Length: 182
Ligand SMILES: C[S@@+](CC[C@H](N)C(=O)[O-])C[C@H]1O[C@@H](n2cnc3c(N)ncnc32)[C@H](O)[C@@H]1O
Figure 1 (tube, rainbow, N blue to C red):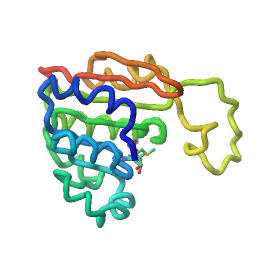
Figure 2 (cartoon, protein in one colour):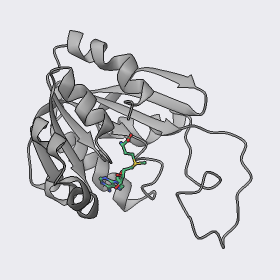
Figure 3 (cartoon, rainbow, N blue to C red):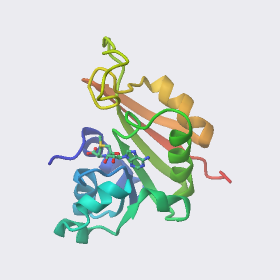
Figure 4 (cartoon, rainbow, N blue to C red):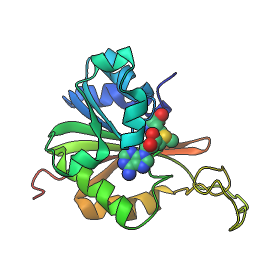
């Protein structure tokens, strides 16, 4: 499993900025967490309890700094240098769940730390209709973003936009949390 393009593109940048601890928030099958761990980062991987249950027995998990049920993140203060969020925003419904995700991100991130968000980006898709049973999963109705839309969601939590790129159907944005964020 290859790491996501944004990880391959930016991990040296984060290292140059002295990032050494990472929270992979919505880690899935751990492709990004294990890549970064192989590159010398200390990586915590968080996901929904049912996904943690699926991956917790895998031997590679031993290379991580920790495996965390996402529900715990409202109580932890990991103080990581970097939070990575790859293709998670696309599937979390707008509203309270997204707010909760962003609050947990800030809570567990070092002041001045980085947030990397990678998402499917806007394209001219025809919606497949209200009777689609694969809501948020099928390629026609998964929520997509432009960088302006992501900025509107993320910047109010104390972040500034550092850089972004579009490539094929994806968008990646790097944010930095204000040094004096309270
Ligand atoms: C499309 S997968 C991406 C996995 C991984 N980031 C990658 O790039 O391979 C999305 C992941 O986000 C997780 N997820 C969904 N909602 C979440 C939430 N509220 N908190 C944490 N993880 C969540 C899912 O369980 C799934 O593992």
